[in-house]
Amino acid sequence: MVPPMPGRRAPKPGLLAALDAFARGGLPTVLTIFAMVLAGGFAVMPGAVAAASLPCIFFWAVFRPAAMPPPAVFLIGLLQDLLTAAPLGSGILVLLLAYGAARAWRRFLARQGFLLVWVCFAGFVAVAGLLGWVLQALLGWRLPPAEPGLWQVLLTIGLYPPLAWLFSRLQSALLDAEVTA
Amino acid sequence: MIRLSIPLRQALSRLSLPLLVAAAFGVMLLGKADTVIAERARTALADLLAPIWSVVQRPVDAVRGAVQEADRLLHLREENTRLREENALLRRWQAAALTLEGENGLLRRQLAFLPEGAPSYRTARVVADGGGTYARAVLLAIGPGHMIRKGQIALDERGFAGRVTEVGTRSARVLLATDMNSRVPVTLEGSRARALMAGGNTARPRLQHWPEGLMPQEGERVVTSAETGAFPAGIPVGVVRWSQGGAPEIELYAQLDRLDMVRLFDYGLGGILPPEAVARPEPKGRR
Image (cartoon, rainbow over all chains, first blue to last red; front, side, top):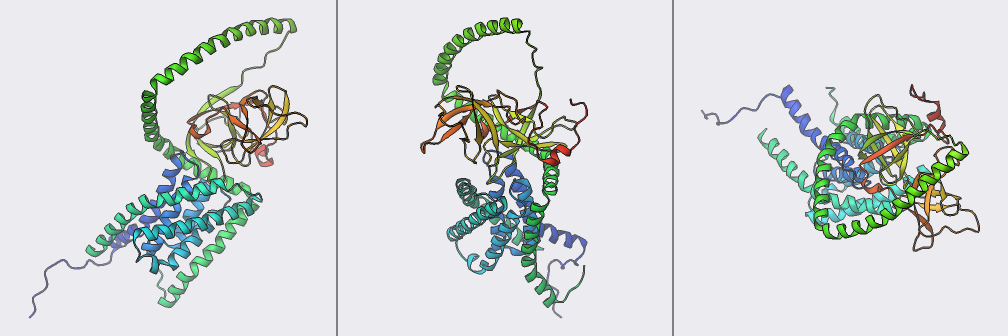
C-alpha cells in the first residue's frame, strides 16, 4: 500500500471558490474604474481620466486577457465617455479596438521586456490618439485642435510605467494565489 | 450557470469583440440622435460620484496647500517687494476710486437713478475635471436643494470662468471659457466695440468679429456684453494680448488651471439656451 501523500485535499468547487474566482477575475476591471474616478478627482490636468484607462486595458489585455473580457472594456469605455465630455461612443470604440489589437499581439508582447512593451504601447497610444481625434472631428463635425490630443498621448504614455509596475505586482500576487488555491 | 459546448463557447468569445464594436457604433448613433439621454446619464453619474470626489479632494487640497506654502516661503522676499509696490499703486487707485465714488453718487442723485439689485450668488467647490481631451469643463459639488440652473454664470475670485451647462441634484457641470464650444459676447472697454470671445481648448481664447476699422489694443480690458441676453454687461473677462502669430487673444483674469471655488451668479437671464433647457421647470422661488 502506498501511504497517502501529506497535504490538504483540494476543496470542492463551492460557492466560496466561485466567489473567489469571480473577485480575482473582476479585480482588474474594478481597479481600472477606480483609477479613472481617482484621475477625475485630481483635476490638475484635463484629460487625465482618458489617460488612465488605456494603460490599464493594454496591460491586462497583454498579460491576463481572461481578467479583462470585452464587455468589461465596453463598460470602461462607456464610463470614460460619460465622465469626460467626449462624444458618446468614441471612447468605447477606441478602447475596444486597442484591446483587440493588444490581445491579437499578446503572444509576441508578453514575451518581451518592459522597455519594448512600453515602446509598443507608445505606438498603440499614438494610433488611439489619432483615431480619437478623427472620431471627435466626425462626431462633432468640426476640426478639433491637435495640441490637446498630443498632450493626452504623452500623458497616457507617461502613466504606463507606474501603472504597469503596480499591476505586475498584482499579477504575480494573483498567480501565487492561483498556485496555492 | 448555462453549460455550453466548448466549440460554441469559443465561437461566442470570438464573436463578442466584433459585436461590442458594433454596439459601440450603436451608442455613437444614440448619443448623436438623443442628446438628452447622454446628458441625463452624465448628470446621474456625476451626482453619484460627486460625494466621492469631494472626499478625494481633501488630501489633494492638503498637498496643494503644502506645496503652495513651501513656494511662498521660498519667494517671501520677492513677494514682499512686489506687494509693497502694488500697495503703493493701489493706494493711489483707492484715492481715485473714492473721488469717483463720491462724484458718481452726486451724479446719480441728480439723475434720480434707480439702482439695480445686487445679484444673488452661491459658492461651489470644484471637485473634478469634467472635460476631457477636447473639452474644458469642471464638475462642481453642490448641496441638495440648491437653486442652481442652467445658464448661470461662474466667476472665480478674479473674473469670468464659464457657464453652467448641466445641473443634477448634487453636481453641476461648468463649461469653461477656454472650451472649443464656448462663445461669449464681449465688449472692448477702451473703444466700447463689440466682439466675440471664442475658446479653442488653449489657455487663451481668441477674439473674433470685432468691427472693421478698429484694432483691439494690446492690454485693453475686455468685459462681457449683454448682447444676446445670456450675460449681464460688464463682468470682467480679461485683457487683450496679441499672439506671436498676429491674432488677438484674451488673457483671462480667472485662473482656470487652478480653479478650486467658483461663485455662481443668477442674473435671471435665459438667452440662447438650448430648447430642452428652457423646457425644464424653473426652480420654485425664482423670479
